[in-house]
Length: 435
Image (cartoon, rainbow, N blue to C red):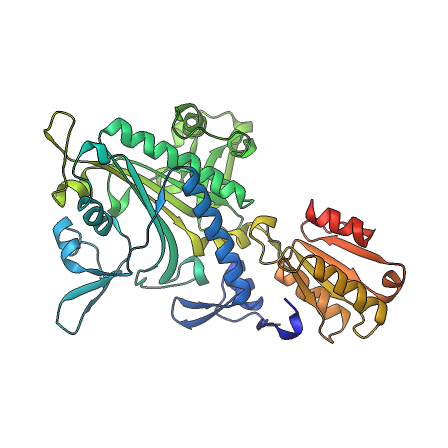
């Protein structure tokens, strides 16, 4: 992308309504623009990050055996009336009527719809287990939407649903998603800690939130230090095998949000291993048994022919929320510091003297070598403005090309995360960027 042609409406001043770092930086970096309270348009730079996060989520769901579908945003109220949640959900649900006066709603979640959909197919125990997911826009009419996309009214979410024949099989599906979530966030360059959580309106008796640690996090969390040191990508899980040991590594060590914090259990953790921090919820998984399958009359024929009500779980990831959470965990006073895997572009090429033959030629060579993952700042701006924008937008690498270096065929590479700088030949710079 050449910045001289880009739709990238950056801001020099911080908008008054931006209260947290991610909201401030997403607006200043031209990633989003608010269209009404809690609702945002995603502009090219922000959309690239959103899509990269979405693709990592999709790949790890597939690795764990989940199959992707796509359910509609508008749902008939009758489904929610059958489950008993229509009147209980509250004012966060956007309710509407179509031209035939039928009651409809903009889906805040999909337990009812996926149960109805899957029950039309599954008639026998041979049709289980199944795990279905989709990535879809949701709407919840927050009374006070705030913090940008962190707590907006419209948001992109991955929600998945498992169907199993027995409680133990359902808990295996839960463990599969538990491990898949750890891998998903780790691939994004984010440290997410699973913490025992309240099941809330979803229901059930087993639930974990996945919390990214950030100084500006929305809630207080408490955890054992060992959980910070383990790399979920260190081993490739056999999702068909026994995942209990992997899950128990996380669940046997103390980790709790403020709502479920147990002071006595916390005091039993050695003082040197206690970590109290702030965190942001980016994922939530639930095992809730037959709550929805039973209320909606979903049964299959068991091995002996007798009817069995399938056991269910649900698994959510806040895809659009993750964009903000990643910024909260990775920024400084100058701007964003994207992890490589989810950066909109890996490299910013800064031409310090457009019109200089050597600078232009070297920049064009570098840009041509990385056409899909580089931004070329070919604007006629002063050098200071280019440096400031590159730091604000947070590209992991900056290639600084000025007349003296270009004359010698040299590129100065700067690593945004650390500030480290190296002067390299074009070939060596490309080898480092591709490594």
